[in-house]
Amino acid sequence: MIIYERDARHEHILQVARQMMTAARTAPKGKGIDIVELALITGDEIEQLSATMIEMEEELGMKFFLRDAENILNAECIILIGTHERAMGLNCGHCGFSTCAGRTEGVPCAIGSACGMAADLRVDTRVMFSAGLAAQRLCFLGDCKEVMAIPVSASSKNPFFDRKSTR
Image 1 (cartoon, rainbow, N blue to C red):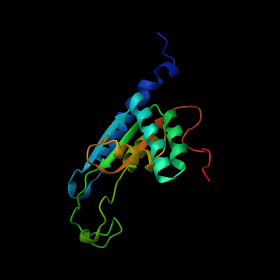
Image 2 (image 1 turned 30 degrees about the vertical axis):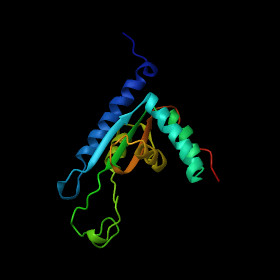
Image 3 (image 1 turned 30 degrees about the horizontal axis):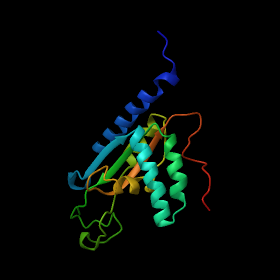
Image 4 (image 1 turned 180 degrees about the vertical axis):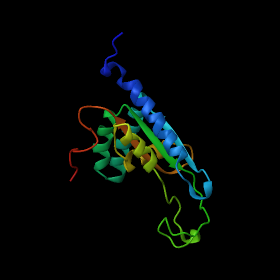
């Protein structure tokens, strides 16, 4: 049997994405309270996300949404990471506010473990605020706040860097 990489790539990337979600799930959390939701999208949902990003550019006037909307179409899949709104009651200052009472809703969101797993497995990623905001608008993660998106790819060149400037 011969299995060519090009034929096996998509399924492999989906397996890597599943490992990324596991890494995010098992990452340390404040007081051990799990407020993280994760999802993996492919195909039609990526196209829907891209279309929403185009609409949002028209609404918000942020030109990088157009660039990112085109860019995510190069992804095999996209990991969505969101958090439910909940202060941890630690008053530790880690989020940038001295007390939990002074904290702005939606702060913070951790995604480092998922990106670290992707790096360990040598796949291309980029954290995208724009795609995360569009996924939040589409309620892909229910009522989660602070949704971030991580498109995943394995190609000769990382499609998520060295992109056209919107300036």
